[in-house]
Image (cartoon, rainbow, N blue to C red):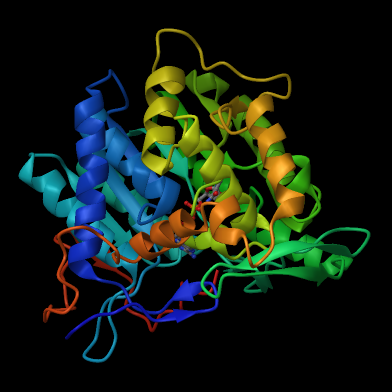
Length: 408
Ligand code: NAD
């Protein structure tokens, strides 16, 4: 099959196995070049196949020599369709991890379900004994509640009032005003049910009951705060409510883990191009401006740079992780610097469709977006035939027709 990108709105419906492999390899090389640190030994990453979760798995394996179990929800290829990028990423990750002699096994299925929790627990019990780091990095548009069977769909909307602001169609190169009507109470509650902390707590409670948490266990979930510019749609919107719930859950889990000398944290990460962030209105334009400024001042980072810092400088440094007044670990510090945000605010009102390329790094945004799917990667011949069917060496895959994970 010759695999080319097929963009539909803010998703790409194809992925390139060789391109994905190279992008994973580059992240591994980054970690190897940064060097080893004393880190976790047995790690569970929930949401391990793309974005921040994949970077966490790579940083734990190649930076600290950890054994990892990765849970995710991805699609395998068939005769007509390529696999999803997270599938190819994981195949590549496992290949490189195994080559270097590291334990890495993966579970493909709905992390919100009891079944996947049970299968993960069985694997931990059988292979690793206990887990000392659990990364919770899911980004999903919906969740089926494991007890009630109710399906919740998240909505990315402001709360209390409608919002009108600039947004881009990065692929058409168009800047336009978008108006988003405020969420109703049900949409707020549904978004909290999907992206809040209930499922995280279910995971930790379950693993604790099964006696699979090591003494000193750490669990971390990821969040975003961002500048005022994005607050209406992010921090003060439905997703922000879900993230508040995630933080309340962290505080609750932190107490529950005390008998094990453990801790639960929320790390606030930088805005990066992932499948999840592409779906949020306003954010892609903000990212395009932010990248321009951070690249110019030499502070630009992607997922792997952020997560390496999180592990090396915060979670596994010689001192306890530094937390802000509200208890968050902040690795978005470089993004939130005053001079960076002042520069974003100066550019923001001046951006139009005509000057988009000059005023922003929209090209960098597009490049990154393509790279999520294994396109635009140096050294890959996209005109050559490639076999889309790639096996993940140690996969335990749910035997059901999967919901598309590409609609987040
Ligand atoms: P992503 O879309 O790259 O990754 C999401 C992961 O969740 C994938 O591994 C996917 O397979 C998995 N997943 C989704 N639904 C699942 C299900 N039902 N069962 C099992 N696995 C499932 O997302 P990301 O941007 O890396 O986001 C991860 C976390 O980081 C989120 O909490 C997000 O809010 C946070 N974050 C993201 C950004 C950003 O700019 N992208 C910034 C700060 C924080």
